[in-house]
Length: 126
Image (cartoon, rainbow, N blue to C red):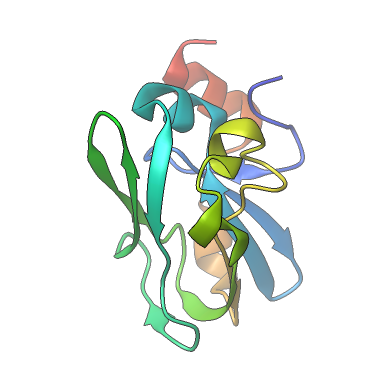
């Protein structure tokens, strides 16, 4: 399955796993497939406050560099340091080992606006 039902999504191809007032964020299987082989990830700074739709990360592939947008506001609590040496984890396992960052203190109203897996599948034509 290219987009698990237990996650939320954005039309910009980010996924979100919400756990209380915290969220884990990454890019979708669809996004990584479109980008191709990832060669570098510029992770956000821990402690950085981000706003919804703000660029908070950059992923670079053999094709292009692409911005990753914060799917909701919060503070960067943790980043996936494994991506520094293995950016291809996003290609191999975008929903688990390839997560990008964890946000804390997320905005519940913004979380309620995220797309369901079914809504996201419509956007990507699945």
